Length: 398
Image 1 (cartoon, rainbow, N blue to C red):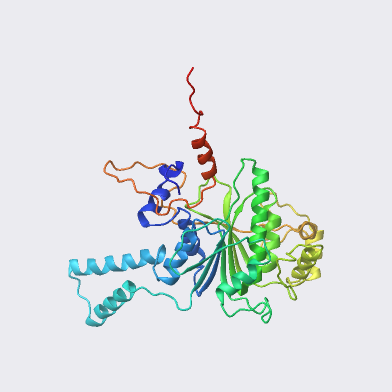
Image 2 (image 1 turned 135 degrees about the horizontal axis):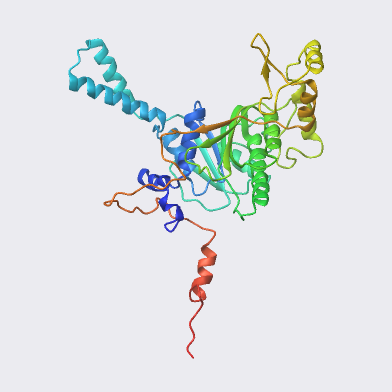
């Protein structure tokens, strides 16, 4: 969130500075939580690729300080406004109802921090400290990171006496990491998918059963294969696009709920998922757990004439019952290993548009970034330019 960023014309960029967020990406996590209630019952969180720390900042203010944002904050504000209107118009209410309204208003003003909260932020880049956040500068692809993370969550953890699988204390793993884009979309999507797999491998090493995983993805040609692989380990997999994410961007966020790995699966960064034929075997095991359709129904579907168009892959019979496609299509889908995740838009549709430009008031005050970049990737380039005497080099006299 640099001072010379082109995002100055973005409403979320200015709003982030007004509300004290380190980056505009904080609104993405808030809008995802508003849609999926990610923080419900969560006390232990790991933030991967955390720098500059906007997502960790959201976790700190919501879990540690007990603040409210999004829809819950709007409901509190509406309740206060209703109470003020009742006083203005002098509407007669009973003493019991008035006491209930006052009690509810007092409860809303009280911050409710959660107990025993542990939040660990990991990144290769240095990150300025945050209140209540344990910061680790480590590589999420290195096997030594997992014991380091478990020790940060539990200081008594000893890798020699405690098994890794028995120490899975994390409720939620989030990752907003992305590579330095090159403009070559196929290459950027591939590098991003590898970063996502690294985050997923680490998440599976520390997630408890029923945990949640949220990560950034780049939507590309074969992203449905990624969805199918995630479906092996999580009960629900949804693709979400927050309102604060630009519609012109290929980024989206994969939300994986209820971590339930196949029976006998052991996560490890030494042997990540997909080594050899293990992933295909797990996919077969997961398919065997799916409901089995009666053979007579499959035979009827295979023999009847199917008249559905590609635009309408399902059709209803005369009784209004939705029928499945023919058995040939079902076999081909299972053979290809592809699965399309549902897509949801998050955030208030009447809110700011991330792709739009808004008029600014004449009396506006330009604010500095909440947290200037600690170690920006362009720092070395600026130093070299300064040593060379500027963009055009040092001037020479003839």
